[in-house]
Image 1 (cartoon, rainbow, N blue to C red):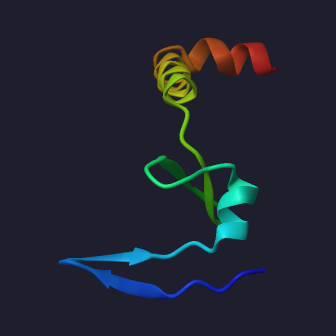
Image 2 (image 1 turned 180 degrees about the horizontal axis):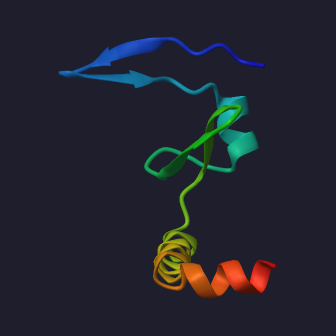
Length: 74
């Protein structure tokens, strides 16, 4: 487990990630991270725009066809 310190970056607040953590996440400077709130806390994963687009479409489908999905689940 790593402890990270919040630091001032201009008018914003940022976190400096140790090199070892960046390697484990397989990201580097300039990459984007996806932030997901889970029952266990916050999860950071490398951002994948194609996966994000697919998840948005899936969520839209689930909202639109909620009744059909409920019947299929029974």
